[in-house]
Length: 245
Image 1 (cartoon, one colour):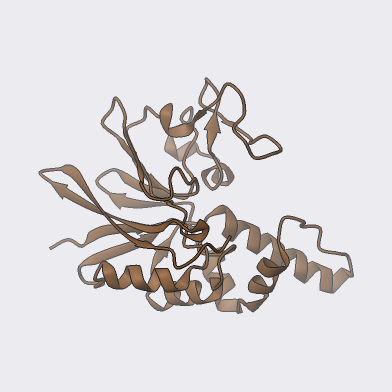
Image 2 (cartoon, rainbow, N blue to C red):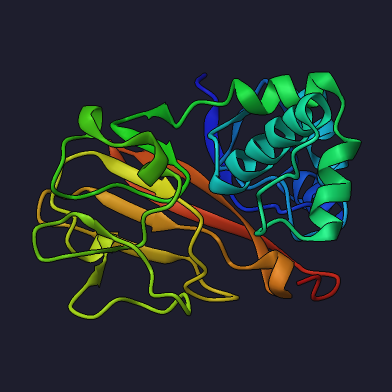
């Protein structure tokens, strides 16, 4: 019997909620292939504990933009010790910096080795943020797979405005997605309660499961059940214990 694939995204250091969700899905490694969609770290209270749990359970995960940020921060910190130059990263809060410095070498190695996409089978892929619809999957920019939100009429990524609002004349990437691969993603909080589901003209699914646990929403898992070759997704959620960020 094949294991059912279950995806969880954007834990953001919400360790208590992560443990509760693991219990709620009745995780058994012989029956469930649990795949994380990145952003295990930052914003929430217990990033190191989340990473330790993922490592202990030998879980697969893609790399999110917050893993990338923390790894860049730690490289700058190491360089600062060698050169005496100040760490130039201003986007890392004091709390995030202190959490990053709690990571041990094994934690950092785990984050460094995370891939940008994971093949889930049945032509489904785990990606942290999404893709540029203009390009086939094998030609995607790894940095944008961790960050993309909005695209222009040609299907290429457009950066957020300086106030982090949506750029003019753009659409969210999945509204323009016409390719045949199905994608499970996180990164963008469409709702604090409901995952976002789309099915395109090629019957490919895009499922966004970041429901903003760290912002006081929910931590969501999706079971990818296939019946006669067709997906019948099942969502399991736990509520945030508080608003952390």
